[in-house]
Image (cartoon, rainbow, N blue to C red; front, top):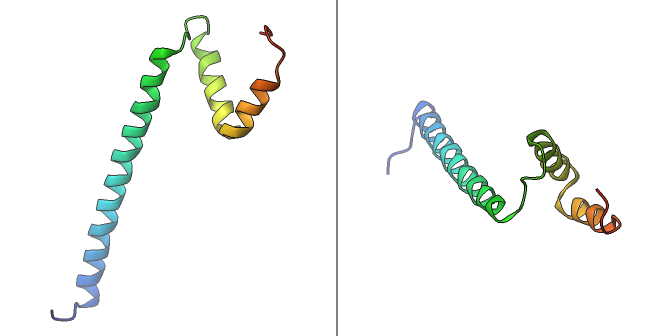
Length: 79
């Protein structure tokens, strides 16, 4: 295989970079759809949309393990 010129190598790298970005977006959408489908099994009707978004945002920002630990530490029946 002949050696690539710097311009050809750059074009090849940029094409690979776009392909990887496209693949990452596809996987991200699939993962979000998977998690979105989990919401079907949770009774979220008692929450306002804002509360639901806040809960998810805060849990994601805190990290899954920390969020679960904090919620488990709440007394039963607290709202």
